[in-house]
Length: 189
Image (cartoon, rainbow, N blue to C red; front, side, top):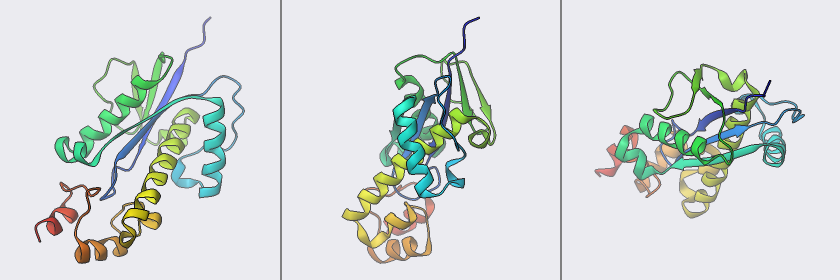
């Protein structure tokens, strides 16, 4: 019997007011030996970084994103689905089946199932969750160097009090999602 190649897909960054939405697709090889995989939000930054290194070294993966402009153009749900599709389609080997974290699937040609809470259940989704979060977090830390007043190195673009105060004072940047209500109200000022 031939083993099935199963990929996990997850995203990071649906809720923030700034930055892209990032998705990762990961196929873990049999006997990968990566210990401690879990939902990226449950892991410390140090543990995520260590796991990311192991995943990148041992797994097949692809990371994709949808920009702020794409999010504003097609909405965050559709942008998330598009980023997931780009990630799955970018894998160097086509999976037999894909497990997607959440309750919806992109409209794609892959055999797949949505798994609510899948990032805490299936190691391949956990690995995708970690890669997507690490990639996006690095992007936001880098963006914080260009726009230090928003505190993105701390809040990663989420609408914290610090971020909202900066939006009120300085207005939105090109990295803000103009279609999101908390940003749109300051874009008109």
